[in-house]
Length: 296
Image (tube, rainbow, N blue to C red):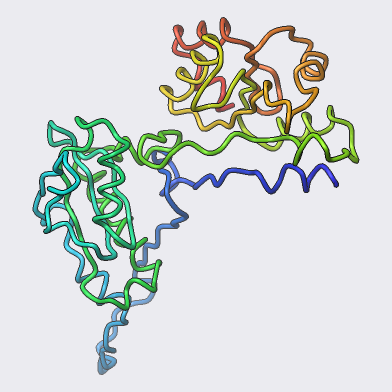
């Protein structure tokens, strides 16, 4: 199996920013569209107005964020407010202080809110505003829902100057972190390229890679846990590789030490180059230089 086939299937989905020169927002691909008058006004007979498209009618039917009512999120599943619809639409979750934390789209708003209630800290998941599409046909058109999502996020940015923190790229509180990468399908599979070549390709195809002991969700040493926490708290978009996974990353620990000329773990790479281990990452964070270094 070629190196590209072994790694490319495991790439996490990374969403691009909402618009250039704005904070990175994770969810989907959007490109802003703005039109201006490129020809002079004419006094000739105006063209007959066409009937609004279905998408425009559905999008207009979804209320603005500021016009939607706030609904408390019950802590007990059975008490989840019936006014939270089990329908497709857009929704915004607020914390106990009334600050918008996350804007999402869903085929079933009630189900999505219930999932957040179970997995997100209660102080971040206090109330919700919903914008259900008022036609069943909208459930088959993801573009309509994405447009409504974009409208709510942009409305919040216009009002506050910043996007909801839960929608920033690198924040996985609401969407869940991407799975750890694996270098091989399994220990029983014979490699067609050297393991060092797989390592080289992996660190060059991903902006930031953290080789840690354990998984991202359950680091197996204090240093790895600290590095993961620092990267996440600084909003760094990164992927992890578990050097203790003998089934899918057999031989990685010794080969990586040789590749990086670094004897300990964790090891953080950015742009294909080794940045350092826990001490260096901690030092960069204390100096306020971590995010800038990793974004070069």
